[in-house]
Amino acid sequence: MKYDDGFIAYLNGVQVASRNPPSTAPAWNSGAGGSHSDSLAVQFEEIDLTAHKELLSPTGNLLAIHGLNFGSGSSDFLIVPEIEATTLSGGDSLSLSTTSHIRARAFDGSEWSALNEATFIVGVAPNAATLAVSELMYNPAVTDPAGEFIEVMNISSVDGLDLTGVHFNDGITFTFPLAYTLAPGERAVLVRDSAAFAAVHPGVPIAGIFEGAFNNGGELVAISDSLGNEILAFTYGNDLPWPDHADGGGSSLVLIAPKSAPDHGMPQNWRASTAPGGTPGGTDAVSYHGGDLLTYALAEPASLDFSTGNLSAPLAPGADDVEVVPQWSADLVNWNEDHFDYLGGEPRQWRIHSPPLGGPRLFFRLKVQVR
Image (cartoon, rainbow, N blue to C red):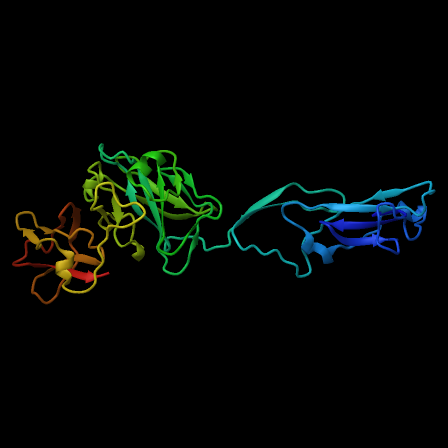
């Protein structure tokens, strides 16, 4: 501060410094309580305001100076304030309670640096073990005006996820905005046409509108984090063994038991939704609450076509809490799960191939187990 002869400084209405103030409460016409020589007045005096840093506001600040002269007949008067800010040091810290985008400059004593900015994610970032694509409507039926949508789900049972900067970079284009979060088990639905979607699925929250469109013939879908690191990627298809009723038949693709983090690239981990148009924002899975597993898992008994070696299992709609695995044996003692090709379809089918097929005798069964 350069001054002749005195001053009182206020930061956001609070007095923070003074030199040669009057001996009584200052008025608009008060004089300085002492003089300040001309030789000293033209030199900056450094005054540390660190003790008053809590008065600063991120939305704007006001520094007010009450200039004081020593006598009304003085021939000169000088008030030159200058503020300098330094970087945090000596144990000072900046604490962020929410994900924020920070813009900052550094001052070296004579000039400001170029603007630097960065996003600081406070929450838990997603990975392949905590984020899943739980539903995909890639080819709606011609009678379904809602259009395409994709649903992601936080499959963690403990942590909320911060999706800031998480983006789709294959199939469609979309980036989650700053501080977008998903609680454990929560789902986020992205749509192609918000008005059309809302008309068919009223009350379902829309997390965003993506650009582009899904390929009806199947394509790669990839999700990356804010730094461009891949979270998950998979290629869906429209031909068997992928669920064919999701290809323009009215159903969506539903990931079976998403909380188990299944491999998105395996068609046996997907099924067609039980309801036309899918269940965006929710689920059509039927929970298992005990009792006969076969009654819960199968709509009809399994069957074997001896001419083709195809084993069929009509699964009950939405029975996602169990896993159905085909097995074969030559002696009813040792059971094997290899030599089966998954064919898809509804009912689900598997085909057994050589070497076991063609032996003297073979036995087949379905192993039904809780996931």
